[in-house]
Amino acid sequence: MKKLTGVALGMLLLTVGCGTAAETKAPQAPAASVAGESVGEQDARMQWWRDAKFGLFVHWGPASVNGTEISWSRAGHPFDHPSETAVVPPAVYDNLYRQFNPVKFDADAWMRMAKDAGMKYVVFITKHHDGFSMWPTELRPDYSIMAGPFKRDLCKEIADAAHREGLKLGWYYSTRDWTHPDYLVGDNSKYDAFYRGQVRELLSNYGRVDVLWFDHVAGNWRDYKFQELFDMVNRLQPGILINDRAARFIRGTDDKPAPGLVPMVNGDFDTPEQRIGKFQYGRAWESCVTMTECKDGGGWSYRPDGRTRSYEECLRMLVQTVTGDGNLLFNVGPMPTGEIDPKQVEILHQMGEWLRKYGDTIYGTRGGPIPNGEWGGCTSHGGKVWVHILQWPGETLRIGALAAKITSHRVLTGGEAKVAQTPDHLEITMPAAQRDPVDTIIELDTV
Image (cartoon, rainbow, N blue to C red; front, side, top):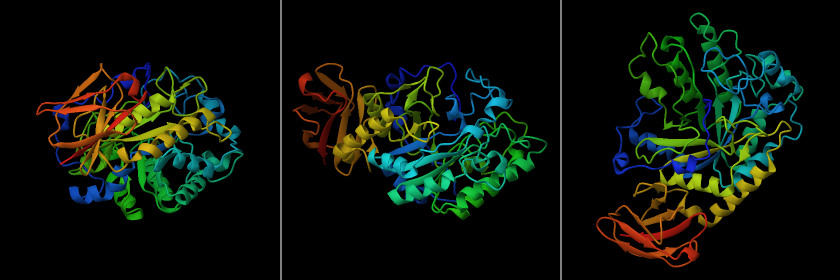
């Protein structure tokens, strides 16, 4: 992940999802990771992801041993901006793998947790910016899981468990590599071949892979054979979804990409980080946010100095994301033992309980048609619109107009509400004592 420095995220929910009417206009035809693919073909390929809404992100690696931020706590990464968490000397950080022995790791327990939380897919960190591989790569075995005491293929165990639980599988892969001796050396051809080879391993050895989640790169366009990379990816895993970061940070360089390359590497969806994306149709997006809040903006990997967000915060983030027409990729950072913090497991369980009650208002819906805001937002499917109210300005909430005619309404979370429709707005009135403390959901039938 791109490390955010000096940013407190405590006000996150006060600044998310405040789309305006102008932002609801569909953008130009979205880019697709498959060359020559029509918008309709891309929509069909992405349908499961659009319906899923909620996924598990897992940042894990040797950095968990000392509880510092993955990669960004390593002092000395000359290809990127400084980080205030860069406090671990390279000689120390680069040897943490010798102590990384997660004997309590249980991939099935992780995937059961994700499924219980109502998540539909998982994205696992296979290699972060520090270059350590969480699988027995043949291309750099001396800095992989097989070089330490654990010596088990973490990727295989996670892939097998995800498939058993019916979860879609995604691999995160950082093109950045601060410890590889060939990274951005000369024409970068050796490193380019290396990382394409690692991606080939990840897409060849673990069955079906549904998402490939790249994370940043530096250098020039000429330093990478992106067309070869994408051709290989789509050949090995037809139908795979790819995020927008395969060539992120290649900018201000002294060369230009080949025609058609930029739309391809822009991938299938945007990835706002540590914030909830704006209301947006047309171009898919997925907010990646940590369950752990740290004052330095991190919290991706195990950070015992961080704060676990409350159930109420977490649920509101999910609702704000989905009403904005996005997905939430929610991150946990497992402990060095391989266990996930019980507090986080419990919060995810609570979210799953809520989704078992109200999942019809989330899964398989689209955000809107009324843009969301601090008050909450809407989801819709077929002739139904669900109004999710997270914050009441007073006894009556007034929001944007709904083009369809409301024929009936009911409060799914209990109580009675009055709904008045005019050509200009909707007014919803409900006694304070009957409102849900987290999310009041009102279902509207429309024609």
